[in-house]
Image (cartoon, rainbow, N blue to C red; front, side, top):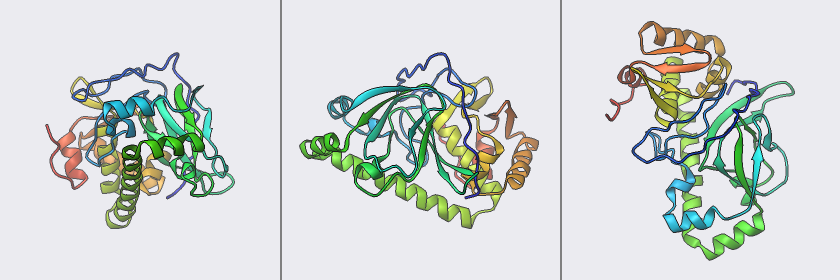
Length: 270
C-alpha cells in the first residue's frame, strides 16, 4: 500500500473505556484523532474484539493475565523489528498499527481498540515484530509474557481455539482486502473503508453517523490502497452526492444506504 505517516495524537484528559451493551453503538469522549472505545460486537466484516468472543468465565480469566500498563497518546507499545514475544491485551484505548516502507515513510495498516490483542504473531514465536503499534489515546493494556501465555493456553485449550480463530479471521480479512485492492476502482475501495469504519466506530450524531476516527487523506489512501490524489477526488464525489461530510478530520456519514451502494454492498441492516 502507499505509505502514510504516523500521526502523533494527543491523548484526552482521561480514557473512559466504559463498557457498552451489545445493542448499543459506542459512546465515548473524542480526542483530536481517535475514539477510546468501540461498539462491542461484530461489524459486516466480522471484526469482533477478541475478548468479546470469549465466554464470560474465560474472559475473566484471560483478563487477569500479565501486568497492566498505562500509555499516553503517542507512546509506542510495540516496535517493528523487535524480538520481544509478549502478547499485548488492550483493555482501554485505541491504537494504530503501522509498518515502515522506507526511511521516511510509514504506512497505516490497521486500527485496534479495547478488547483486541496485538503482537500475537511474535507471542506465538513467528519471528520478530512485523509492525509498530502506537497509542492514539490514553491506553490501558496488559503485557503478557510468552511463558505465561503458553502456560495459560495449555490449561485452557478452548481459549487457544479462540485465539487461533482470531488469527485466521485476521488473515482472511487481509486476503479479502488484497483482492479488493486489485478488483475494485478507488471510489469503491474508499467507500468500503468508510463502511467498515462507520460500522465499527460510528456514533449517531443528529441525522448522521459520525466516524470518530480522525484520519488524514494520506491514511485513508493507505487503507484504500490508493494515491492521495485519487482519494481526495473520491471523497469529494461522496461529499457532492451528500453521502458524507467532513470536518476537522472527522467524517459524518449522511446517507449510509448510499455509502453501501457506492461500496457495491447490500443495503445496511436497520
